[in-house]
Image 1 (cartoon, helix red, strand yellow):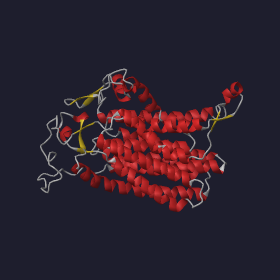
Image 2 (tube, one colour):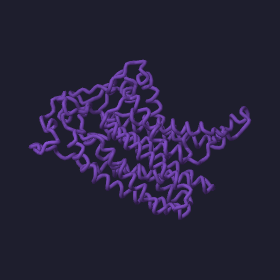
Image 3 (cartoon, one colour):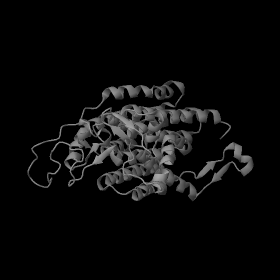
Image 4 (spheres, rainbow, N blue to C red):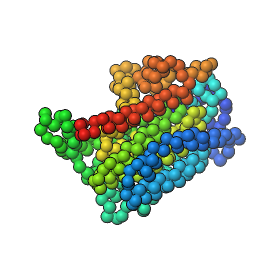
Length: 425
């Protein structure tokens, strides 16, 4: 979700935006005399700066670990296709924005209300472009990596079915604006293909300090493991959706987590000698690289000041993609630590989401058009928590603080794995 207010076809704008063709009946043959201006161009300088953060991943892939040439070749083919997906996404977003605006899928940025930018119509639901390009890249990659009798092919296609299903349901949510009770159920439905096709292990390794007390080293959870998989998909999907509200936050947190996932997977591949274990983490890379590339393309339009809104389409797509990456890569515990800010945001939001405290429709900070700064409210979100404790911030500065916290959480996860290795598991 973005910090936006959607304008219905029968509702006049509350902040007195310029009178344009929003009340024009699109079913008539008459063409509007005023056309919406094109969106701002992508921020290529931002992409160039963010690409520098991929240097640790490239160092681990090419220099630090002696990865098998065949596996490295598959990763590079996937990376090349992902890079192509980035440029396609950058080109397609302006095209798609014109179509969604024609169907009145646009909103006004609430965090700029009272300023000229607050009267600009911002196209919504542009996450649909990212989802489509991601799926095309992931499907075409099968030609280069999987054979007809591959053991991973069924689960790979089941993962893509889940992501496709969730992208569709997210777009439905953007169009129909379904209530929260229904939103909680949507990821459960979308995760069904993966749950039904999953043929991997259903066991967990007991932490070593607990083995003397429990008496076993491996515990088979059976159907409870699949229940856990479904709950993880629900959490990841909705946690991205509710940790939102400022320009660049939804896509930015996905970029940070996806980068951490890539580094984690390449470290596990380099440190392991088990071929099956390596394939599981390679499987995660094959999905994480297209996710990162297409998300970077969207971020070039969604970074402050945003020229497009990502919509629930993107937050559902990104959350489900990272959930299936963690499930099929068998590192769901690590994934939850990567999601530490989202866990904290969920805990802060729980009293309002459960109805114990009244929950407004938009739990956003207050914007002062005179100073251009945001002030935290008493709503239970991490965004407001940061503002209440750090003081008033501009929207861009606040987003940078939140993404820095996300990166710190990912670094903390790597430190925990380093210090607990050999002792915890």
